[in-house]
Length: 497
Image 1 (cartoon, one colour):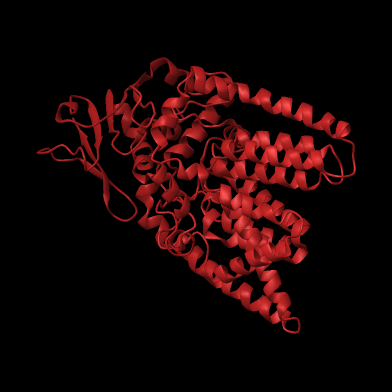
Image 2: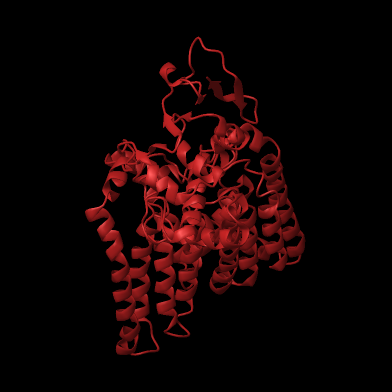
């Protein structure tokens, strides 16, 4: 197991500050809000130690942001501080997968599950970039592990609920999963043998009261704040489309051939799982159904519930929103590899060697692609151009009284705040906001000398520096510079007067 952890840490930490080559807007938002909290306890919107960070109007959850704040306390505001919590949350998720699978199906199955978890494409990019879901998954798996320990000590039930609460406040998808699992696990705990109902209620009642208490901020968010505007913007109401979205997560294309189409979630051309894993996944599922050992249903429940958050929202199939599926696919596949190897008793070691070698070769192909062509080909998806604006031109900003940046490709203001390490209090005092858009997001129109808008020819005034995309390039005016993505394509034209 130690060797698997070493492989995991090496492949996640190697060039973590350079690949991907820049931060995308959510990472920048997480990093800057953590930085802002460190300065005076307030986020960019001037809320004191919030449980819901308004950010762009989408309300990011607190656990990962406060984790980054701790990292920034020691490492400063930077890429590594933003991404390192994801690495360690994912590493501990890996360890939990080992212990959960070991408890359910034995040590060897646990080792295979942990190994598959380490090398699978599904979670690879998430585990080395600043994704909130990594914290949500870790605390969810911790809750599952504590539940499996409730047959020994009743107090593990309370620890389970505390873990689920942290998952609930880590990533939005787990706000759907956690209540379902709490009810199911609560009923199982109540009905288990070995203790009186009164004794078990002494743990269930305070745990339930605690969970209801933490629902109050969520209720207030959707009742009195703008939480529903974001929900209405991303959800879909067509029942047929929801069903299609749900089953798209079980398609051969998504799982084994093409994967998520978003390059920030997976390398295009790779499935979320390796094709070589398919027979072991089927074997593991068959063994679970046939033997029906204790909690045999648990991986199936997680896998079948996993696509729901993605199914009811736009953009499906969606690897991030359905992230709960992944670790339990690893569990089932790990069991399948173990059972397959045990079938060949005399040649078990050879079979294990061949299977591990095939998986490693698949991973080597994925990982080498990630280190070489991926960061070049998909730098635009990681908003490399915005990083170049606020790093390459930062010394020129003092020469101009007005800097206009195109907002056609996202949330440029957050890159200005992050890369310039802009004083949070100064930003709050000068920020002017646009109305909430169709996605429920609120963008910054301007702060200080910076203006973010669709570029027009009238923006090119005296003492003005302008950055325009291909969508709002100023016709008939020669640019004074170009900002190119790593693949050589121009992302911004630079104008000055």
